[in-house]
Length: 109
Image 1 (cartoon, rainbow, N blue to C red):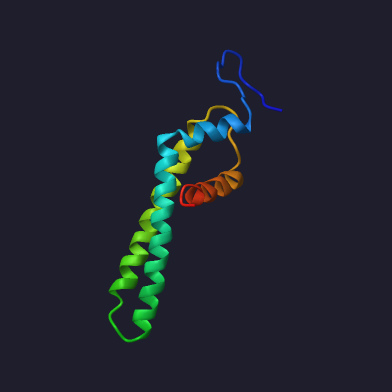
Image 2 (cartoon, rainbow, N blue to C red; image 1 turned 135 degrees about the horizontal axis):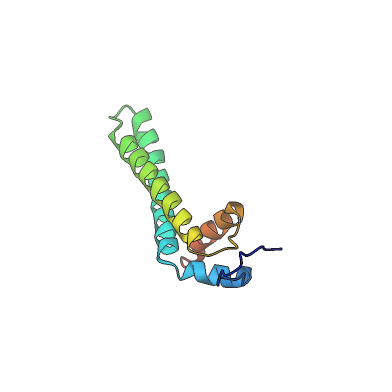
């Protein structure tokens, strides 16, 4: 059940319309791409750990961690902005997380 204030023109349109609205939202697309950059940053971190363990300088690890922190911050901000643009009845963050992960690999198949 969704409670809407009197005079509020926005209404609950259901989860399918929300998913469609999210996928057409500019902030959501940026969040999806920044999460993909975060995946790449995690790979760079793993390579940096191997290189650091081999005795080289930790610069590769530092770059990977910096990229990952930046990607995480952008992803979080853009998901919050995309969720705020949905209107009154917003999905829970847990379902948004699964939708975001699914969207990152959806077009890569």
